[in-house]
Length: 451
Image (cartoon, rainbow, N blue to C red):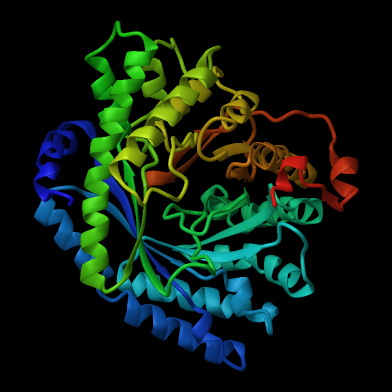
């Protein structure tokens, strides 16, 4: 049995080391909301979310007070909207608006699921849906969108990859008065998972129960603090310290998840034990890597250090809970990690190095600002590269990139809050448009044929 008294030792972590429950995310199925037209479906979706999630924020706040652990975000994920609007895809924005309105009225921070799964092919209705994304993200505040363009079992849908480069450009242009903020709410996946509580990529998978609670815990500051006590330990011992720390963090997350699910009459889904940083000093994955002995994140040795960190976090979490899932690992978003921000501002970390790091961590090229005049084909090529890493290595990878309108290398963008700020980073100037323009499907690797 899980002993609630074990959470007591986390108090110092909360007060001094930035431990928090990053999100309590309620997953909701919308399949029962489909009606004969878009307006009726939107009304049904709004009513369903309002009814099911009406107690989510008060419950999270109550648990936070009871256990003294901050719960930073209260979020909702829903069935991919492209499945709900297949009969009227051009009017998908009505459902997006209804979801955003419900999130605002409930006090939900973000709602994910304006999504499509097109990893093996893009149906006509899905292409129409995808083209609604820029306008919907520009007109909503809390709604997030994700698109899965590849998997290890099916390959990479390059037609969808090409289209997503264009959609990212359009989304940035429609939100140019906010430094391309719409792109912060849009992520392109390979091997997307159904139980991810983190935005912008959360959606409620078709294989999930009707109502599920997934919790994302985070503790980069806790891990860095623990490592500061063993400055001369070898890497084997350092990995043990990380594992023990991840165990404690995950136990706290499981307590909150189980209690929240019980209070809300929902199924307990998973605990995602990702180390998710914030722009606050003392809450950085980059600084963990520097604590391990790197002069600055991005120098040679960074990928090896990140691989060790990611593996140790997973091992510690798996021992603490039988329901670890989501994206569990270490995130490396540039704009949301003060160490990454400072390294990028100095030119010490590049997109190429970040791409190499994504081979060994969760999840991908995340919250990276690039020049506003970057061609759509280059954005598509960046997505294709990252999707290939995920496909070949049988892991989830993603791209959340912001072509900052009117900005060039050396400028910066500022999104505020957890989204942080980011220097505009250079991209390669070589033209990939012919490659992307070929379209078709990059075939799945041979290891996909397991059965």
